[in-house]
Image 1 (cartoon, rainbow, N blue to C red):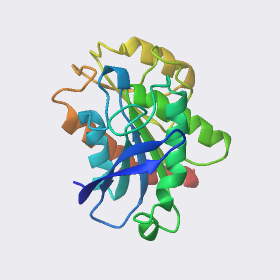
Image 2: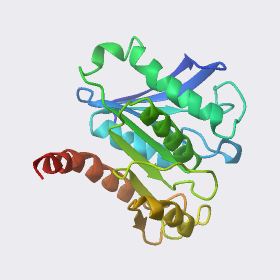
Image 3: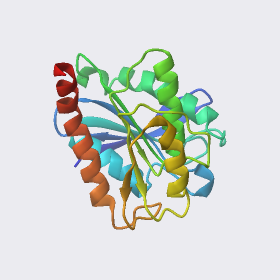
Image 4: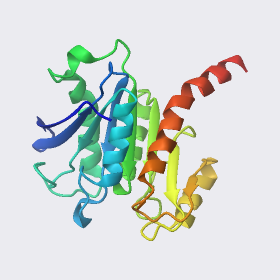
Length: 225
């Protein structure tokens, strides 16, 4: 569990952005940035899947940053179909490490993780694509309820954790598999789960934790191949 959750406002490209910072108990391992579902259909940083992702990262020693997209909560602006939201996401990746409360607690090397749920997965994937184009590494990426078929999801790294509900009524599993197949990208399917993973949040937490904790061992094994 996070040691504390702090709500703050930071300046963005079109005005203030509302954030929730989930602070870990232990020393910071890195910063994870998390996007929420579609703003026009009730999506906020308080969404239970988004909060579960944040608590999971914080429990593993990461500062989890949840933002409200434009026009949501105290964030200024209007919905921009993913373009402005991506700009805000990228802005925070540069701005949050410079915050007075964050800078003194950062490790010498600052790993970045990116995550998103539903529409937030589209924003997260776009942000990761932009970072890769500028040779900025993302340590982990977690996409839940990936928005394939709803929005033009870009290709992602094969190490990305993609989790989808078998019975997702909002984003059909078949659309996600059609997006993943040409990339040779594995998809973790949760049997019986709907889009919002009702009664499956504990399983989401375990899947994310296993992925984060297991990747260093996988990387080490690759180096010895």
